[in-house]
Image 1 (tube, rainbow, N blue to C red):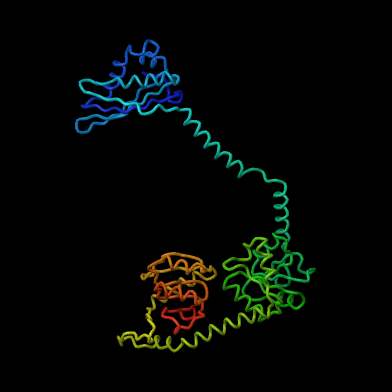
Image 2: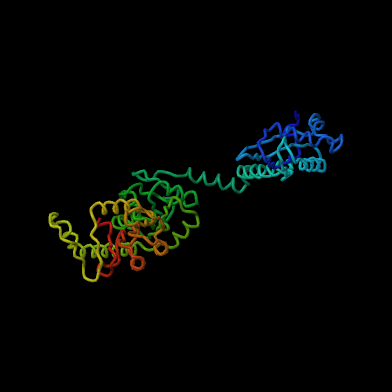
Length: 415
């Protein structure tokens, strides 16, 4: 029996065998030893090599189908390259096993050390990557981390409402009003020590009093909630400037560069109030124009099974209360995300994309039925929907009149 272990082997001889008959594994092993005996000389006698441990255990795997036997032979070797090659070539002289004709073909002599070397290289790469991830930071990174932690520790409670604020509220001529404590912490982390949070949806008296003595900039999230806070702040307090985070982002997750960019692009409080007023007026006018149609649908007698009469030249689809509820639920989930969901005729979601990519997505989807998104229904969205035969556009508000398009337009107020 072979005494060499696979770990000590340097090479492995792989061979295929085909036998025109049915034989067992011991017959194959006996033929290998018997037919190579005396062929290679005393130094390369397989029995002696196996006894000394230079040739390992010969593995034979066979299977029999339709009266023929096929299989593989594996021989581990600790000989050198030339001697292993001679042993492998000697196997191919075997032409009969028992009473059956046989053909043995050596397919490959594998160098175990190459395989081990490849494994070592891959493992070394993993270890190096892990070491680099957990390596000690340089002195600058340490200094930045310590400075950031100190700034975060500097947060204080200001005024009778005990609002979260930076330490420089009193000595600063300008103050930045944000929504919550996390926003103040992020600004502190990046070196802005004059921020204070309103800490809720209602404006505290401390903020109103602060707006009367200092130059105040309202810095809110880039979502619908941010617009509501601006509207309340400008109506109650004397806000000098207003700015917002980029669409879909919150102040607490902005980088230092994004914070500077937002503060540089601030607008006056009066201008912000005017823009909000125009947007509200535009939405109200659209609702007034559509109100008669909504009332007609609400008070229509259920027993009258009259077909829905569309407005001339426009293809309208009457939707059920169940569909309205589905649209409403989807729209509520999208608030503040600046995202859009594209649905098929069964109201299953075909895909989710940012609002800015609605037109591109509609061109690539052939069976779109409706689009629900966090934003205003613009003319370019309507045009893209008409070109792709989309039946419904559901948004927060609409800047397109219903009678200007065959696409059915729904807003959050109608749902």
